[in-house]
Picture 1 (cartoon, rainbow, N blue to C red):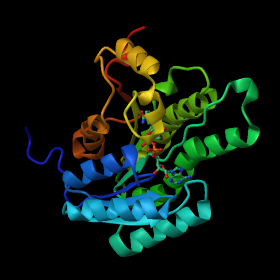
Picture 2 (picture 1 turned 45 degrees about the horizontal axis):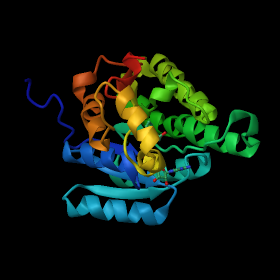
Picture 3 (picture 1 turned 90 degrees about the vertical axis):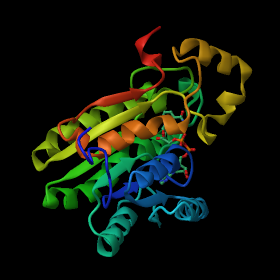
Length: 255
Ligand SMILES: NC(=O)c1ccc[n+]([C@@H]2O[C@H](COP(=O)([O-])OP(=O)(O)OC[C@H]3O[C@@H](n4cnc5c(N)ncnc54)[C@H](O)[C@@H]3O)[C@@H](O)[C@H]2O)c1
């Protein structure tokens, strides 16, 4: 293998919503591959614990609190990172929420909150980070989508709409920013065990259905995403852009 193809030594990565769950595991994975990682979350206490855990492992980690819906707070956070640590080479747009209800009863305020965090947040954080990437003519952006960017499920239509938006926003970003040597891709996870999916995991009926429905015959582990994230953050993917990489145990390949 060519030396250093997947090495992230010295690269600076910002991962949104990384106080726990997939974002935390992705931050740890990029850190283990050599990156200096900046974690973000809306929850300051989660963030503090996550940063401390990574530092205990020897990873160069720090934290910045902002809400991905708040353009002013994002700009302030990004400016502080750039001043203290230098430009951001890798952005992982991971922050997201789930709200479940039948569509005919879905609350309008909940719809707006979900779209704001899961879709508009990707636009706002990327817009703030990409300015430095354009100046440096180099950057990697990874948007965390979902198998729900292609497939619906009962009670999560707004989430499906947002993740479908993330899929095409990824293609739009890749189109507009490719000329600046910025690669933008999406990782679309299947069902991975985190606090977001804990209730589904604990439901024996859903659990049995999912394992039967997924060719890999099991739930995903957050660690299952790390290989794709390191690839899409490294020079190994310098001519890969606008792609949706499904990490779903084969779920979207079969009915
Ligand atoms: N877990 C899965 O199976 C799965 C599957 C497909 C996609 N995803 C996506 O992966 C991402 C992470 O999911 P997870 O399972 O780790 O969820 P999680 O709920 O465990 O973690 C989400 C994190 O985002 C933070 N967050 C929420 N709103 C925020 C905001 N406005 N600003 C900043 N941070 C905010 C939360 O505090 C939390 O730490 C989401 O985008 C989710 O849609 C998850």
